[in-house]
Length: 406
Image (cartoon, rainbow, N blue to C red; front, top):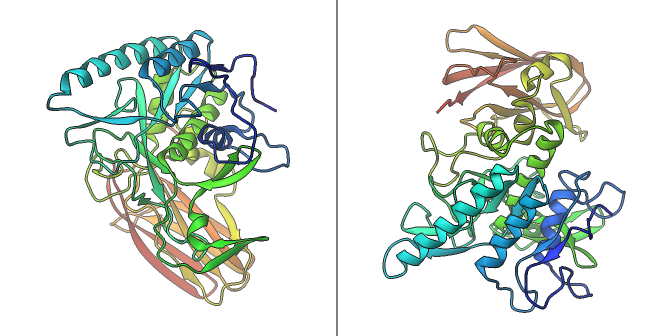
């Protein structure tokens, strides 16, 4: 219901912007659902369900291919129509050296020009980093994601999420391109990495367990699972749309700074990571980074914990925070087998209290709490090791975590 047919357009000669009838996977439809499927109690809900969606067709539905000029024309059209966010979940990889290098250089110059034109007219562009599992730091150029003024997003995945809901979501997808220079940050795209073939059940749906690590969204005349960097890009585009709704005057550079500046620091490499680039998409952090109330201040004024599972655990437990290292936000999970007076605090290496995360009486269950290393003025704590501690009735435990401001 939020699809704008009046502005939707095809740039493929001889094809309408719509697609043929039937029940089948359609990439654009799947991506659009992740971004903005309406909150109408039917099907799935997008990251930003109140957006207006404009479909711009740049690949033939019959050949699955297209011309770069069609994509450039669509970007210019979007900019001229005053559209706020452009999601490009397609692309191709070309060599940076050798006989084709001249063509690659010319193409990059053209995309740089088009994206600059679009940014100057207020269009924020996010594009997928591609699925060739190539290191984009090594003589490989992915278009259009490597282009100036376009944010490049690669993919991460859980592995066996329905087998273990607390499994890490910060694994690089096996197919995703990667690199420090070719990836701005990463976001959920899914993968089939889980090695088992047993079935899992969610509500009334039973599938092989690895299926539930995929992205679930709209397809033609229905819903379906898929795994690709296009899904990752769609998550980023949805968060960008939410940011724009909070800050209508935000420029494309403001949106870029919010998404990149709030990204979770993951990976072992200092600074930009060779797999995860600038880190993992952090929706809550991005929406708080330039808000009048930062997430840290919001924590002081509201509950800073969430009951994530009412199933009663058998033991008290404090788990390792994730991500770790992190910047600026991390999640800490704890389990309560009985109603408890709970305290969770953060301390520096000298034993000084840095933050109180929980000081409440809570019913039995599994909880998440959060620590943001940025205060209400946008300043971050010093890089280094911190300890977090829980006291729940007679249970006491502590663990260490690392904040990286690189």
